[in-house]
Length: 177
Image 1 (spheres, rainbow, N blue to C red):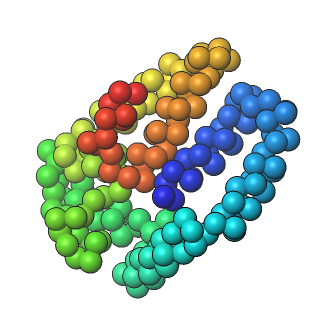
Image 2: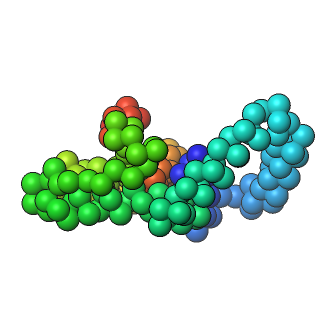
Image 3: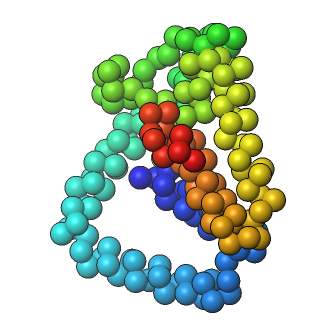
């Protein structure tokens, strides 16, 4: 999904900036990208990616018609969730206009765990959740030069980015981290 792709790219950039990626790994990156593109090109249909691509293009078209963007495809859900937080900023539980999944309210998700925290607990709940996520990042940042600290930091950073593009409150690995 797009969230995972963005998270991997952002985490790689972060690792380069933090000095945790070797020059050798940087030199190998183009080869890995070329090999991945070659695999995708040769087995596109066999992997069923043609059908997935068509479905994604159709959803993007629908999202754009409803006021979203072709970039993320989540703006409609994020806007609805943000308005729900604003509707009840102190206690949470605000009204949400559910815009996705063919107007099926049973299938709606905000696609942002931070906004989900705001929907459940208002701005105080959202602030607490952001602190809950940021506190380990700050602690791991100080240990980024250690092998284990750097590994945990990169894994945790990927997760903090992914949960901004998906509703992950029920996902075990979020709470394990």
